[in-house]
Figure 1 (cartoon, helix red, strand yellow):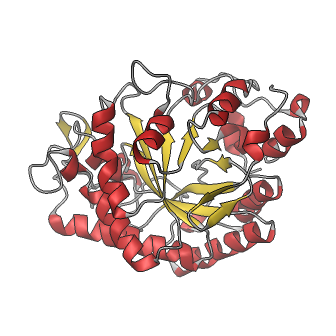
Figure 2 (tube, rainbow, N blue to C red; figure 1 turned 180 degrees about the vertical axis):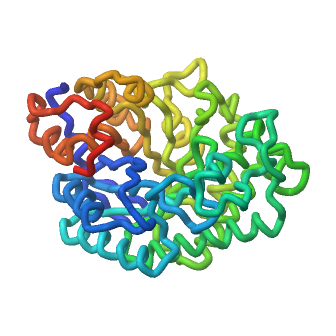
Length: 367
């Protein structure tokens, strides 16, 4: 571990939201919300991280509707009255611990399995009916369905603010609904919602601009994006920096405040000829605050966990180097914080001998 991690514990602002440090708890699906409603155990789970020096907590994915958004059991939504009241209690607990938190709004899109959902007769939503490129499963979303999806994201963002959270993140990565529109391999539409980057980004831009119009200027909006896809880890939605700029421009114009750049290992270069990672390029092209993520503080990347490998604590030297030179602004930590709520505090205090290994058994508990 490095001798000094001071950069991680300096304040940073996204719009009007002042964070006490640069550490973000990454959104991680937990499936501990029976009836799609987070309980007291979920509230305590998040509060523990706020109490132990996490600068910003981004929740697990939260469904913006109760029909097409998810087929995964025990995923929370922000739709029902019970769920809204429960999330308000979560926000109150984090605030009482002097923390900041936002909800991540997640529509599974083509990765929702209708047969495992509560509405097996309703097809899943996607840009062109594709989950895997070249293999259509459903009809493309209609214009009316697209408008409904936008309205539902906007309503969920407003509900997030009303519940007392500090920001909201739209999940636009990993081939879920918004990213299914971004990626040319799964968006084969020929109308205004497809074709060029201007068309493929229209769904995200409309969600952002309509949310901004209703939520005001002082509530930070974040979007998470990725090059890689659930069905193709080697995918590159933008092949060049020029394409990346085309991808980002409509969302910047729409009013996004920060961009969460998902990659499997944070230090990997995004394009040949530069050692900037994905978040570094996004910051360079837009000037907006960026969040990097990927295998922070652990020796293996996330897919190895599912194969049964144990991740050991790893050096933060490279992370500190990249942040000190200004590549990106914030760093999201996933598995290390899932395993150990005190990870950030241990790093701050230099208690590196107390850092924990991570194994997949951690997914089975809500600690």
